Image (cartoon, rainbow, N blue to C red; front, side, top):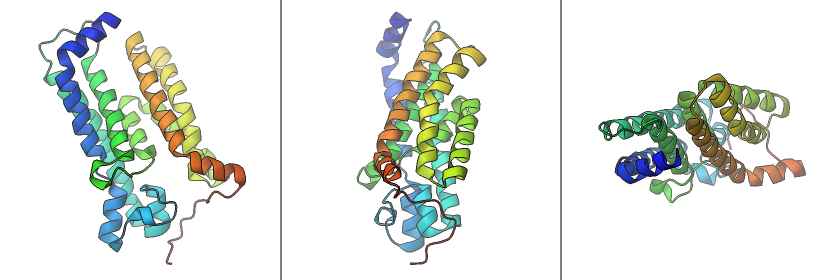
Length: 234
């Protein structure tokens, strides 16, 4: 399997880089920043937590702006995953990958790069969001079972604690474990697909948790903001 992967990287690296680049550029289109700029002619990163994400938009700009942000973040992630898989498959149509599924490799690579684009957007000074919605959009395509269970964990934790950050961290921790379980024992994927999915989701999970370190410190100190659906009019 390792030899097949090395052979794939040697022969197919241009398509993989193209898929990753396109996904990163799509991920860099930050809906929170754009929506807030259009609505208030300001930068969402100057409000509240300073995070360019849907929760901060909800608190500072209202429900409609948050809904548009959510749709945008999910949309770019889903588009990136499909585009990545398509590019790697089409541009390597004559390549025999053996047991490797080229589309899966392209989808996971593109999904990861879209998330990094959201975290560090090239169009907005490399200051973006925390990648929760983009991760959810990616997993909806790659394994909707995992995505929906993580969403359930998120909803339950937020319902109990009223803290979106705590729900995001708990869902992030569960992500790689659930991915491995479903890939190996439910979907019966080849071992390489399972290993690839676990490694990618573990990397995403670690990144999401690291981005939430300030929130984790506030949770421990009892000073973390709790979710409110009331529009901030200040």
